[in-house]
Each structure stands twice: as C-alpha cells, then as structure tokens.
Length: 414
Image (cartoon, rainbow, N blue to C red):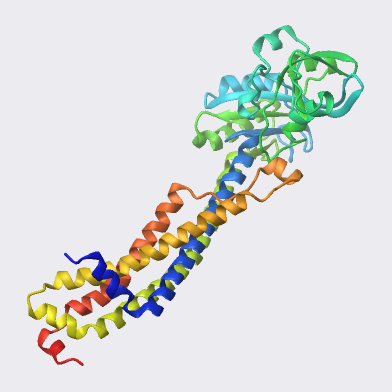
C-alpha cells in the first residue's frame, strides 16, 4: 500500500502542469454544476408556476357544428349547461372531478375601495382541481353553499389587497358585489401561475354556481373543468365528451368542432420535456469542458510515467506487482480530479449563494416566482459520477503503460 504522501509527491513533480490541470478541472466542475443547477432551478420554478392553474386538468369550452348532419345545420352553437355536466358525470366513470364555471365581470366594493373584477360561479370540486387553496381560517365553496344558494365569496389575494389592504384578513367580513352583500368565507393562498384563462386567479373571486344562476339568470356555462382518475384516461374522455354532445344535439360525432379543449396535462408534459432537454444541453456543454480537463490530467500522467520509467523498473525488479504500479497512477489521476472537483463544487456553491442574494422584484416574479439555481442531490450525483469517471480514465491508461514497463529495459532508460 502506497503512502498518501508519496502519491502527492509523485503527482506534484510536474507542479505547474498539475496545478493548471486542477484549475481546469475546477473550472469545468463549476461550469457543469452551475449550468445544471440553473437548469434545475428553471425547471422547478416554471414547472411549479405552470401547475398553478391545476395539474392534469381538462378545460372544456362549448363549440359549434362545422358541417350539416341529420338535419342539424352547420354553424349551430352547442352551449354547455347543467344537463351536460350531469350527463358527463354519470356516463364517464373515468372522470374523477367535474365542475361547471360561469363567468362575469362585476364591481366589487368594500367601503370606499372598489374594483371591477372577474367573478366565477363554480361547484365545490373546482377549488382542488384548480389549486385554489384557502388560507388558514378560511374555506372554499362547499355543498351546503350550493344547496342553500348562499351569498358567500372566496377572494383572490390581489382582490383582498385592493379592498382590505395589505396583510388584512377579510374572512368573516362583507363585500358588496353590484350592491349585493357577500360574506367572505375564504382567501386564496398565494400561488405562482403562468397559465390562465380570463384572468389570473390572484385577481379573481368565486361564488356558488347556484347563487350565480339566481343573481344573473345564467344557464349556460362559460366552460367545464374536469380531472381524470388517471392521466391515461384523458384522450378517451375527450372522445366520449364529443360523442355525448353529438348524441344530445343530433350532430355528427366525428365533428371536432363540437367542443374545444385545453389539455393542461399535454402542456405540462411538453414543458417538462423542454426543460429536460435544456438540462441535457447544459450538461453536455459542461461535460465537454471536463473532458478537456481530463485529457490534461492524462497528459500529465503520461509525462510522469515517462520521467519515472527508471524508478518503475527498479520497483518492479525488487518485486513490485503490476497492480501496485497501476494503482499508484490511477490514484494520482483520481486525486487530481478530486482536488479540482472539490474546488469547483465550492466555487459553485458560492455562485449559487450569490445569485440567491440578488433582489428580484417586478410583476413577472409575482406570477412565476424567484428563479434561482438549485443544486439538487440529482445534480450533485451527476457531477460526482462524471468526475469519478474522468479521473479513473485519465489515470488508467498512463497507469497501464507504467505497469507494462519491462524492468530490464527500464533500468537502462536514461
């Protein structure tokens, strides 16, 4: 077993070359780590904000016939109503949750503060599907609200801020919607959201669908929101929805314009693939830098072997085994890589910490969140694995050459 001090001495015999190589490894490690951490941070923050509207949900809008069929003319509108909602719920067991959604824009007032904003009439299942989670002390619309047509309302955080002030708790207080008093029963927790229809949830309000129907005499939904039991059920649900709609109105079941869909599951999968591809590209760029540094280590090892050929011959002449010579130079390559990698990882942590201290303000960050690099366990394992492989390969080939030295020839080497 070789003492560590001897390995260090042999490694730094070519001091300038080794130090430059270690710096190259450190730079390559910092590059790949920061780039992968940046990619992971972007994937995390944008993935979270894209899921803000809901995870794996389907938005269904009413459509119209695009061609004549069975006496039904082209261009006939096919609205969505409660009968559609109930039929879909009963006929499609793959649907886990389903809610209709009415929409209007009304003036909301609290004292002297007022704003005109979006008010949606919805069912209780709507909240969990759309990630509208009330803050502690409040709640969302419940079945009793629907049954009794209660005048209760859930506020988005921006609405609450404009009506009640920053940091105020609006729960159990009243607001006026077009002069009608509504009891605030919930305040939505702050969330990040890049996708929306109508308006961002932070600027919206929600009341019971039955109350909405009574106040505004509406019977046709703006849209439906549903969530499948399994992600794989989504395409089958789309087909079945269109078939049921065609059957009810006597339209062509193959007419793709009968309903319009927004499949958020599809959107989220595409986004995930884009950011995964970005991380691969960033990793390849950083990995190429490390490979170049690895070649530098291999060159240093080859020079070391050439300069130590006579010493290797003496060691082998007095009984040193091939694996002992092989182990020394492999260990030297791994050691140089470990030193450079440690410096690079430390520098990466410093860069990530510095980025976290940068103040980021503005409306963009209100919707998306603060994008900062994330040095996850996955990223760290990838970097350590790449470093270990490079160090092993950089030391192995020169070591194999050293182990293959003929002792008699080596003793004559000058």
